[in-house]
Image (cartoon, rainbow, N blue to C red):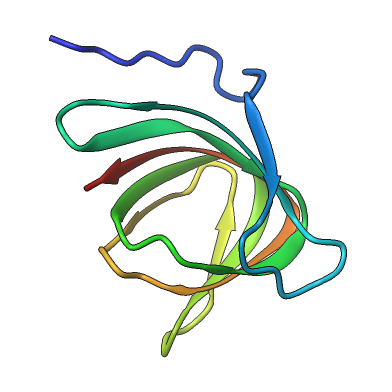
Length: 113
């Protein structure tokens, strides 16, 4: 059994930081991540993003729980979803749209390949 355990997720120091891949605003939002890819096709981790607008391109199904911040996600062809710390989302595979981060967000997530 391979149990992944992230302790104190609001305060974990994250490993990698990069500008978002498809920015739509200035300044360009910066994401930071700590993650574990498992051999069973699952990736789990902690992700943080600074304010800005950008296009989501991930094609995997994703469950995420927001532990800090405030943002809006507008799926292509859909209505805006207001998200705050304490909220959780389940995004079906191939969900694309626009992230608008108003306050640095931090979430835990699971991607299912």
